[in-house]
Amino acid sequence: METGLISGLVLAGGRGSRMGNVDKGLQPFRASTMVEHVLARLRPQVGPLAISANRNLDKYRALETMVLPDELTDFPGPLAGLEAGLRHCASPYLLTVPCDSPFLPPDLAARLFGALQKHDADVAYAATQEVGQPVQPHPVFCLVRADRLPTLSRYLADGGRRVEGWIRDQKAVEVLFDDADAFRNINTLDELRDLEQPAFPASLAQVASCINGYDPDALRVRDAQQIIRNFVKPVRAVEMVALRASLGRVLARDLVSPINVPAHDNSAMDGYALRGADLPQDGVASFKVVDIVYAGKPSAIVPGPGECVRIMTGGVMPAGCDSVLPQEFADSGDDVAMTVRAGAIRPGDNRRLAGEDLQIGSPALKAGRIIRPADLGLCASLGFAEIPVQRRLRVAFFSTGDELRSIGEPLGEGCVYDSNRYTIYGMLTRLGCEIIDMGVVRDSPQALEEALRTACENADAIITSGGVSVGAADYTKQVMAQLGDVTFWKVGMRPGRPLAFGRVASNGRSAFLFGLPGNPVAVMVSFYFFARSALLQMMGADAPLPLLQARSSEAIRKKPGRTEYQRGIVACAADGAPEVRLTGAQGSGILRSMSEANCMVVLHDEQGNVAAGEMVDILPFEGLF
Ligand code: AMP
Ligand code: MG
Image (cartoon, rainbow, N blue to C red):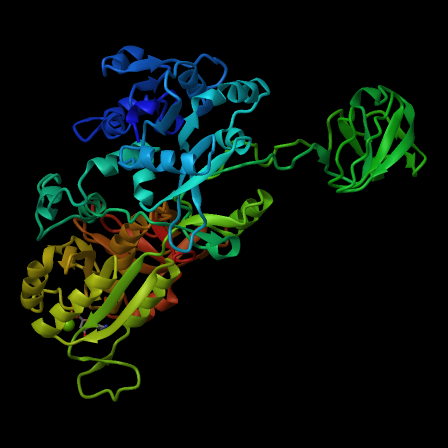
């Protein structure tokens, strides 16, 4: 291919609205700017180069490329840039790429050109397909015959605005590329920031050094939480699933409404649709009924003055009508005539407006949301059959301890059944993780290493219980340190003081590790206050812990200087206010206290004794458990 045949156009004229209106192309990225990375990748593939931009023109000109502002002024979409590009294009072909795709493939021009020639097409554009997923077109990575300009101008003059729409009218060929990541565009400053950082920028020690007065042997809960938050990285992998299967999953992208819901103004009641201006100021007015409208069966009739239409709930409002008189408010009425008294309704009443539920083009659901039943319905009302969700997080877990027996085994002297395996199973399942249950691992360095390696090679995160408290920790520490970057903390909290956290690696795979204490209540508390939010962060989910307040029915003893998590039962007191009492013995091994509770009472570091009647923070289990 002769590169001089093709001009290159970098589309940088958008508003960057998802980036807070910044100029996307000029965002700093890996030692230069995004647009410079794009130019560097495109330059060897084409002859003349230009940038379509509408702001900061001087900065773009400084890159020694032609800069083309849009000639259409009313809209900033990519087609406006393409039109300006085609007007100035001196070669027979023009290749467009967006300014936020710094990884574009090195053979983009060659492959699109090859396909265009082979099929004698006017337009060739890229597409990718991930295993088991539908083909994903990338129409802004597009090679166009320059003589197609008149068709584009006509399309734009007719009000067309979508790249896909224009391409549909062309003789177009879709070209499948293997590397979906090469077409990845960067839409938010967060994504940009993530890419800016190498996968694992800092050691745990570096991250921890940001904490004032960091002391691993006396760490405050909030500092431990912050270190974890700063160290953990989201797993970015999206899959499309059928609508029903998205329940409980994490939405991977914003869902934008493609339609107005409802699509038309319609009636909220069974009654008579009329013009508000015809309602009587005083006395009674009579209307002639000129048609009947059922839901789903609109009428073409336009009622004139003094006329109305019988209408059922959900029926499309006839042209000119803006109000509905519910049938029970009519003085008299049938399918022929109706009378209404002054003041029965106000003009505009009982009309649902088009788009009042969801407006076309507006975000219906935000990425990061965990999909609930109402969201399923919302997606259905928009006609979405498939939903982009984050792939499930894979979490491996095992219990450690020679004293542990599995259910079904005889319980020897001094042994206990492994209960953590089941609570952890339950908590992970409720979070929507894909779980790898590894059972009990003996207290031996070899067994622990073997288990950690297996977990690490198969999972995104590992949860262990037991073996991190003082006496046990020595070989655990060695083994974990040997496999990666793990710190042992003593956190100022009760229950659950010991906690190991970090990242381990084996055979090129790595996983975040949470070494929870062994005591059954401590496991759950540590899971909820440390592991849960980290796992959600890895899943890309946005779901903060819902701390509420309730009145304590009793006095609670509490030492300042550590956070205490007591198990409580919250209920509505006689005066209607939420009131919480503790559930009996609060020992960290007493799982019954947890089982009986419906909330955790959270007593913060600085808090001392609580008097009866004082307000305390609680974390309701409903929704967590
Ligand atoms: P460790 O942290 O290993 O010293 O364990 C602390 C306490 O928790 C000991 O009494 C253990 O027997 C108990 N424990 C540890 N793991 C489990 C488990 N998986 N199920 C029930 N109890 C456990
Ligand atoms: Mg143990």
